[in-house]
Every structure is written in structure tokens, then in C-alpha cells.
Image 1 (cartoon, rainbow, N blue to C red):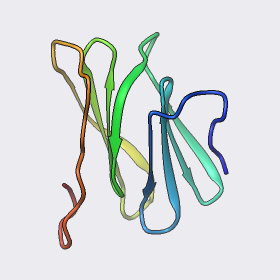
Image 2 (tube, rainbow, N blue to C red):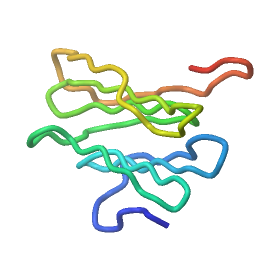
Image 3 (cartoon, rainbow, N blue to C red):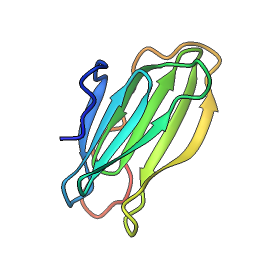
Length: 106
């Protein structure tokens, strides 16, 4: 399946319209697409505290309050880091929401 089984899953979601899956665990974001797994690793010693995902967006909060946003490229199918913002305090929950029909983002 491509899922990590040696780390707790904080969030997971179907990603894209062609069977992709996203698994978020404390050490990073794992995008499983067409039988291959690509991994985004947390910078330094930071860990993911909470996360949320929908079919084309992933948002994570690292310990210390840094929030990172990822978007699925509709053409290439790659999950790419799009923005990072420091909230100045720990983040305890996130919700990226669902995407309404006809829109690209929530």
C-alpha cells in the first residue's frame, strides 16, 4: 500500500482523482501515487503536531506553531509545498475543509 506502518498516522486522505493517497505522520507527509511513495520530511528536529487534508490540499502544523500548506499539481500530480507561516504559538487543530464543486481550493 505504501503506508508507513512504523509511525502513527495523524491524518490521511484520498488525493487527486486517480487513486492517490496522502498519509501524514509526525515525521512528514507521504504521497502515494501510481504505486510510488514520495516523502516530504519535517525540517530539522521538528515534528508534525496536527494535520488536515482534502482531495487537493494538505495543511500541517509543526511543533512551535509553523503551519505549512501543500497543494496537488493537477497536471503533474505532485504534492508541493506552497506556503509556510509561523503562527507564533502552538497550533492544536486544523481543518482544510472540503472543496465545493467548480472550485480548485477550499
